[in-house]
Amino acid sequence: MDKEDRLNQQIALFYFAYKTFVETSDRLIGKYDITRTHHRILFFVARSPGIKMNELLTLLEVSKQALHQPLLELKEKGYIVIEPAATDKRVRCVFLTEAGAAIEAELGEAQRRQMVAALSASDDPEGNIWMHILEQYAKERPGFALFK
Image (cartoon, rainbow, N blue to C red; front, side):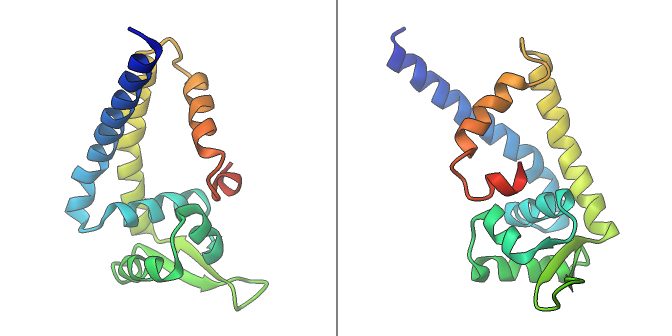
């Protein structure tokens, strides 16, 4: 197999891996009547409680208009609260409620189990090489510096 064929095989495997990864959460988000966008919001808010709205926009790489409806839906379902920042009332911060944290934990646990199983079956069970590869892909994303 030449280098181009090998790269094409790796790209195909990356695609299949991604599909499997998102299917795990897709099966669960359906029972809560939320979408992948809602799930991504819950994921990042769980890792950064009180995240400022502008930071969330940067992490998700979406416009205010695109974020407005999913945030409203999550708020209506009782999964998040949006509060003014303590230092500047003009700045809005997002927090998970207990219900939102429970859903995010359930979705996250399923994906973490899946990641642990895949890494455990490799020569890199701690995922150091995988992390390096992902960082190479992610380093150009606007939210990478915020999340790292």
